[in-house]
Structure formats: structure tokens, C-alpha cells
Length: 124
Image (cartoon, rainbow, N blue to C red):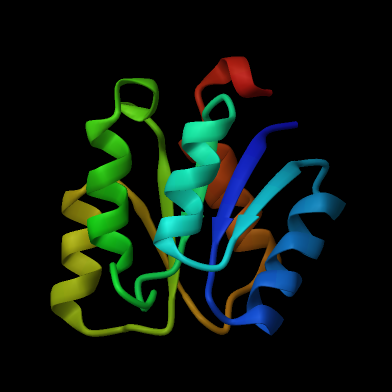
């Protein structure tokens, strides 16, 4: 079981992701924006992995991942991008960042597998 930070501005998508993660045995922290996510990380111990939408208001998912990785406690935080953006440049940018890149609509088992693959052994 891992602590997963879900950052998604669409309430319906966020709730679906959370439900799948909880069914998969994970504990979930959720945020509606990059700002909320940064506040959560500042107030608590860092999550084991973050699931981040790219199309967030004010700060996109790539910028959020960069900001998280600048923080010493989150320097090696694995990020799984979950987004509706399917442009080749964005998919490649996600891969260059070393992150899993899943598109919406998503398959729950693919999300759970991406999280499992991104986690260090200690989180399980």
C-alpha cells in the first residue's frame, strides 16, 4: 500500500481515480490544483508517488512535477501523468522526465500498474 497524491482539477475524474486507488489498497491524498498539492506536501510527509494531470489551472502538471522535485523531501518523487493530452511532444516530454504517461479515459489496471512500477520497493 502506497500513499498516492492525486492532483486533478476535474472533480469527477479525481473521484474515479481515488476510488480505483483505494480499491487497489492505496491511501490517497487529493488536490484540485498545483497550489493545493504543494500545500499538502508542505504540511505532511511526502507521498510515495504522485498522479498528476497536465491540464491544471495556473501551473501545468510538468511545472508542478518540476516544483515538487526541487523540494528536498520530494526530490525523487515518482510522478505518473494522467491526462487528456495526447500530443506527441507532451507524451515525449513525460517520457523524458522518466514518468509514466497515461491518457484519459484510462484503464484502472493500467493506472495501478504504472503506480506499482514507479514505486521503490519500500512502499509495498
